[in-house]
Image (tube, rainbow, N blue to C red; front, top):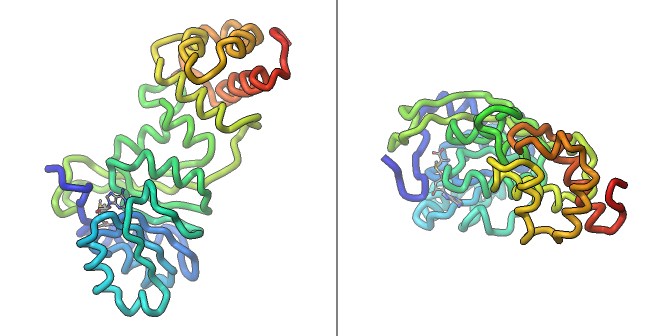
Length: 266
Ligand code: SAM
């Protein structure tokens, strides 16, 4: 059964304690997305975290404000009503959340852009598996390439539908995400993101054809100059087979051609 706004509440108290305890949150600013009825919020507060919780459902916001009136007054909890993909977020160090699965992708990209020390996040199992998919394997895609460029992801815990009320149809994974600098220097992060997006939106095409299909995104003349300077065996591959280093190579060449820094074969 699917619930409105992904409202599957965690009822497995041992899992709640584990999730709240995977990283030391004592005295830290913790962002929680989708606190729901506040089980995880309570466990984080009990561990000495200062929590900012973003909840989209106004009825749940009211409930949380009643339930946690003392903690809110003491300044240990702030409840922000709104959509976590859009609202302004105050500064935070750590993210701990049982995410709304339909917004997983948007929220993950948003978090990686804003920056944090470490995150412990629950995802639908299939989504989490795509985040860690390696080149040449079926799950590889824009998500895995972009996440692995900016972070390392470690699975910590698997939960069955029985851990939730109402029961979802899917299994869940809790993962730790630790941001890092890209392993290969990137001339322009936006161009890199565009290259990855364009190539995976034509994932059955070779790199050469995929890049040429990105005309709406890149100046065709710059693409042709970039292609002329890239190795032929790279251009014959498909995006699912490329290593992160090769996405960086392609994007950096395009960035330089867009900046008019490189002649063809330069
Ligand atoms: N953390 C709670 C728990 O573990 O029991 C609830 C988790 S439930 C899977 C997801 C929660 O996210 C719900 O409370 C839902 O209302 C909220 N939610 C859904 N979409 C959201 C969004 N875009 N921004 C903020 N909260 C959202």
